[in-house]
Length: 113
Length: 112
Image (cartoon, rainbow over all chains, first blue to last red; front, side):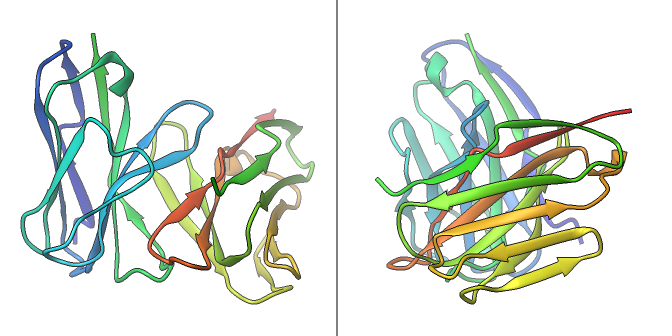
């Protein structure tokens, strides 16, 4: 089992460009999450999907959209990238909600110039 | 908004010394989780505490959850170079278990 996979690993964008970050899990988990990690600030939740077919905003959703394509896949889209979105993005999954253990992907390091 | 404060931000220790990181929440938590992130890596789950006053041990690591379920600590005895990384606490809210509220992390740096 690969666990949680993310693509790409690294990306450099110019301000205003768009891109989609891909995430897939092979653990048959119901819930999936997108976080961003900035130095000294821990992890902040962007969006989550409690189950297939549902998505909800987290703490910092502005500038992002998500799609829960199926049970395995959860993508994050930046429509018009801004330098403030330079960060490391982590996808995670868990069996369900209710504060269960989360499994993380390796992360995408995004730089917006 | 609801926050989980984690201190210290950094801790330098000599190999063999002990290490402790503390988390405090402004609201009661339903549970708290601890994660470790190695440099350049991703967070990896260590443990979950659910009960008031709970204490759990994993070899040299001791985790505690406060009686009021608002604070928690992680203590490492006799640190080793393999302990290097950033330790995060993440609390699950009483009114919504969907979201984990993350502390900012404590970076453990070991001097050889």
